Length: 272
Image (cartoon, rainbow, N blue to C red; front, side, top):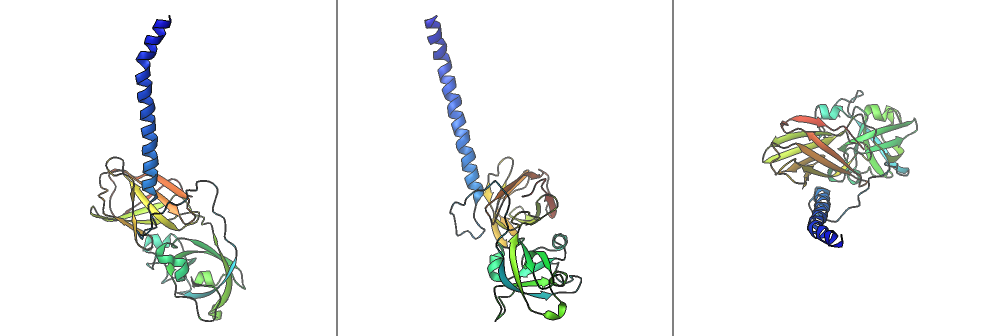
């Protein structure tokens, strides 16, 4: 019996060793893909590893002083198409009329686009989405500058006020449905606009992966929330991974099918 056991072990030992090595290799590959997907903030200057947070929800910041002005028509006209974040046409309408242009330090070269702020004035409060860049703080006024649409401004103060003091804080964005990805460009220059992002709302890193030849590829910020890559993505089912300003991540697996088309928007089933 002991001889049979030794022969049996001799037969199975190489197979067990091979399975163990295969498992270790697979684990290493997953770790490598996660690292490749982390990318940077779109500027290409930083390769530092960022903390990955998958638990909990975005928590509102403390209240701080600022000031607000307004622009556009009373119905929000002139504020929903274009702007420094790139939310054009239907993409701009997604955020409605309660939006704001934010000063340079909150806009941060486009990284602040999509963030949500609660503003408190003499008349009441309002939650707005950052969709544009405002001029620097007005001389003699405290804190950051918010240039609000008229509908947003009228919720916190009277139209005649012009420039008003406020308190504000960054809050979680409440969105309906999943994250949206609008793909434009051509096979040699792919552009992706990311919208309808919940949680922190802003996007500081974006990566894309195909189902075959395209491995995790960090995309670069072009401007606003428009991201680019010169990798040919055609013929692949596309998965996107978004990292928001609080370093939380959301992966939209196979959100675009293999036969996806340019100038189309694809919506994920999940959000932050």
